[in-house]
Length: 204
Image 1: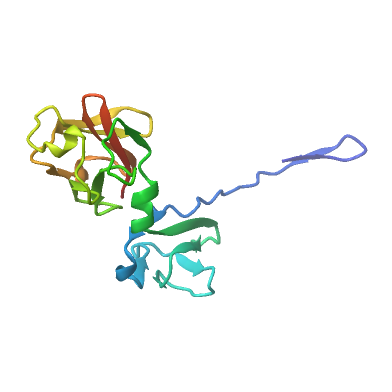
Image 2 (image 1 turned 135 degrees about the horizontal axis):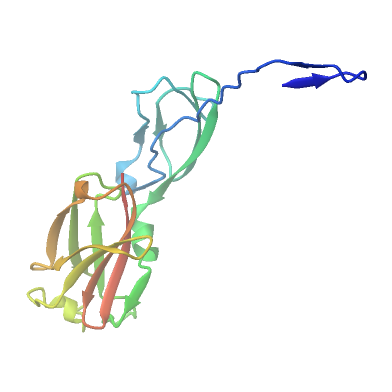
């Protein structure tokens, strides 16, 4: 820093500026559960010297979630720098009805609802992701009921649209090791010719 007075005299001095980083924590922002799994204990990492302050006023690395909805947490490091995360606890039964983001050519039951559901669990997932097809009560007119149809493909793509995994579906069920993939959101699609089902899956 250089200071100049009214007479044009100058003086300089070096000033050290230290910029502290924000807390770096990977947070699973979406949790999908059935109502029977409530209450649910959400745990934040304990390997950092961080303070976790929840919007409920609780302080600690864990919180007991007893109802579906959003939970905000402020994370503070030892330098006083803060970040905030919102965690959403979603009813899996409602999500299964609403989370099919693409359905084309799927057979329907007599009450005009999709006859086939694509189930991906657990979600979020860290290790093994189990994928299965289930009927919605009525007989389906879709080729997806033909579980031995070798043309059925499981396709996993990232949010940029890049396919990161592709394989044939075996007997209507398969298991995929998600530890091979980076953390983030993925689209899991089941395709058979012109028919397709797609679900969102979070890998943490």
